[in-house]
Length: 258
Image 1 (cartoon, helix red, strand yellow):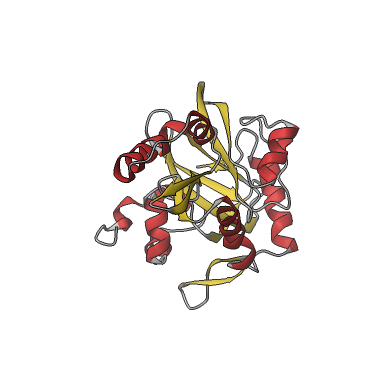
Image 2: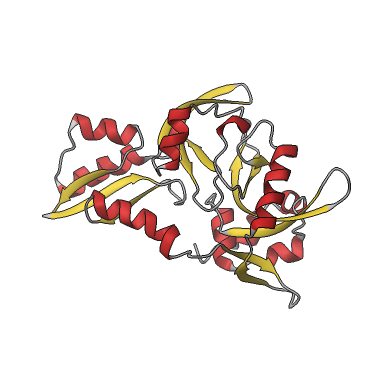
């Protein structure tokens, strides 16, 4: 990863629509460029967007580089919200039960129609932005990973465990006398992760990532020093701005597609 020039893979034109010109994009921290170029969800970033009335709206959001149905690059932006509002999203069409499960931190699988194509996708709520991250099930090669683990560690998964994996639920394995948990996590580059420990440890680490590692909302801000720095970027005002922008621009997607 570190030997790749990620600047060559950045979607400059699409970033410019968010007020991030080429110079600002090139000056992003290397870790952020790696995440963006590889299709992983970035940390919070404070960006400026021109509203229809000409006003400049500054708000924090997360970005993810993906592809459309034709395989062309597409940039998804997940703006900050106060809460998950299922009725806003006309693509995912979340039910009350699905929204409740997402709020609990579960990963769910659902058939979603995007640009006329219906595909099975994993859905996961980002706790910082309250936006739903989603990825095609076929893009998350978790079952292949489990097959590799079975082969290397001489273990065999039961039918119930395999079904849980397909549904996006984490499972606990005994590998070499030690407990290992595996599950879907769309924040990871590969779409899943493996940890040392049981399912309680899995749940604890998922909460750690947000509750303890991010006691405050921290995001990348372009400072007057002409560089990106981590600062607290989410306050009541910025949340309201994010919600306002979402009402204006987000009629067909949980994230903004650029």
